[in-house]
Image (cartoon, rainbow, N blue to C red; front, top):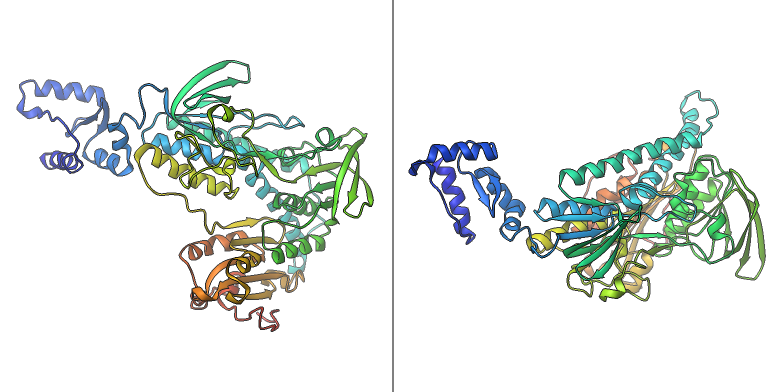
Length: 568
């Protein structure tokens, strides 16, 4: 016991923490005090440590509190000020907002999170968890998997399985997906409660830089104050300003809970959301057309983007290129509806078509309007309407921060928001110093043939370093699982974009192949560590896998040599 007490005292002395110690074996009423402490804390051993009136525990508990940062938080009153209701209030209950709020609470802060979902124009709303969980990554990946299973059922016959022609039940899929999402919504509520985070299902607006007015769905108003406020409001799908778009069109906010099959579908846009939806809807057996204004997957490597488009076309997705819709007209109510779409090409040609569902995926707008940012002086970028932040996510107002999709110039990806939220919470509450590293963030487009990438596109690499300083190693190949199925011969493609002057450092990693997401995640660590081409060459691959192609790549684009593979 004496040794444990000495360890705690030494911890306080080393960190310059003033403390008082009551030695129970040296005072007359020691046994009575020991009984009182046990009754209050449930702890019968010593040392029994309290910080600012809050019970910490014994030696191990105190050391753990020190290593986690909780001790520092308790010493400064939870990282906050008694004049405020909370130390940290997060506006937005998506992936980033939840990560930030939970981490801040773990660090010892008093935390609240405000989350309120405005219905889409079609009336769709959802529970706690934000875009990713409810109308983004999670339902998208599940529907992607549903489509891949249909494709696998077709291939299975080539592998000797006797399978009747499969049919798909949209309503059953939606019910299963929504059931899973519901379990996640409930799980987040439980996590907040367990971490003592106050959850306010209410719309928040700034009154001043430390004050928010919240209004719940019943119209009840409440004012709260906080030392720090973190914006994690994310974005919502953009709809075009054309007649009928809001009345008869839908977006990714609606498709995953649509109660009936979409039927014949027109998808307007060429974003990853547009192409992913096109892929899984076509994989479920629907008639799908994509209307593209200019290029596919703007901001991504264009060679890879075009390969993704080619694979979609091979699977039956139709494309109307260089064309934009001008009006939607209702022919007949459904479900599903019948909608006439009027459109015009860049050459002025009028295009008409009839569809059951028109899904717009033309971009997303940050949720920065009507929350009072103008009142408190938070600067928004004129380019995208997002919050202008310093590298530590601080806005132009010293106590207001932003994370995730609402931050100007940063990747709109769930793991980015989560990482930024956690690290920000540690800095706000316990003076940590680690910043989010936004470079070389891996991502994947979950089309039927997935596209994974890390770092620069080939175009951006050439623009940054010059064509003479870039060497591209590449390889076409056939995934082994596609050989017997006689699918996509040499349809997979991988390339490494290397900077010659930096010892052939790999500055761009790209692959179109089955399971590209899993493959790309594995190489993300190597890219973070600054891998060179010879690091890939020195790695012995796992055979037979798709990923091993990165360890055997020896053909460069500049050589002009054949890059299509034959054999295993």
